Image 1 (cartoon, helix red, strand yellow):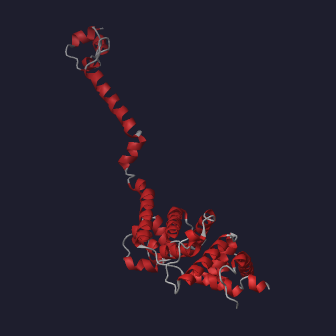
Image 2: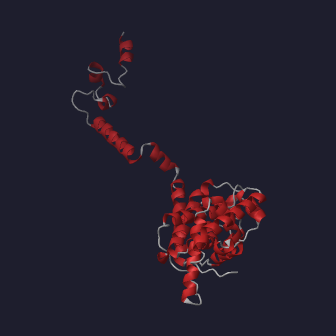
Length: 123
Length: 205
């Protein structure tokens, strides 16, 4: 009686085999999609490493565009203050380019004034 | 195989046709190393198998394509971490595909039989064709209800044509365990299909 209601082993195997026969070929579109995924994934993993030259390492070490912008601004400010110092700030450029040695010696000793040498000679 | 030359030498310089001889592991390693021709070779090697398996389990072309694409995507993701020699790529893909297809079938369990697409191979008569379709649909649902190991053991045997020792090696279990899994799976399938037997038009044998 059970044989009539329950499929036999042979019937089960025959069904499995007919499932196995139903394996169609993939469409070209599917193959193209899979290939696209493969290459996209590959470039995701690989692109950052390929661009890792010395300059790009230095660039990111300095903090990228933000860091670089700050550095440029600070450099410009430094050059500006050096060339055209505001009132009240010691004019270091003049200290370096001493034109009138006497004046520099009297007023503000220049870096190239060597005041101590003159003092020694005068003594 | 890998032993043929240095890794750098093999990159991009290997003629295209020799990729067909490369082992699955070697191809996967070259894919992970950024070799685009390995991506192509792997796609062409595995997509037909994965798609056919998904179709057998799902019986629907569009669904099978989705599952095949997803299974292959998982292969691309795991490629950099793949440990050669630990598992076979084919078995790994078979398992992933089987589980993805099963999840989909279980999710769609409420779908009426009418909504399930019919197989595309031509059948003799309309009635017989519908009956065949219904039988296969019932079989797919019963397969999806099996525990993973039973399902894998049975489908590796019938879909891939593997012998019991091969299945044992791939699932890392004993041959006796494979026999037991297969026998239990067939009994479970028979029980699951019993209520539908009369409706599905089995002939007395």
